Image (cartoon, rainbow, N blue to C red):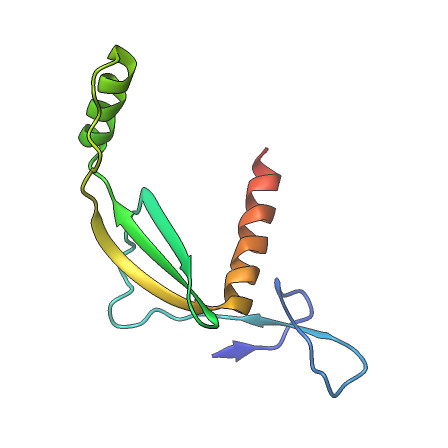
Length: 110
């Protein structure tokens, strides 16, 4: 569902018009999106015309154990296991928009 609104946060430019128009896009939950997933780890990589972002979860006890080993000067493991929760392949344009939105969000909080 799309609502046209001049106060939207997403800028879309119509190359055939002399003005840019802002629209607000209202996302509705899909069949499997009613429950949010919590991620404490991400990994991103570039693909051909897309950015692949993996969202994962590392057990907090594992993170604390590795931190404890590092502080004590003991050998830390080369690899720690994480559970992949979701893999997103998004266009470079959408990735750029996401980066801008995250920067705005973090700049407001600091």
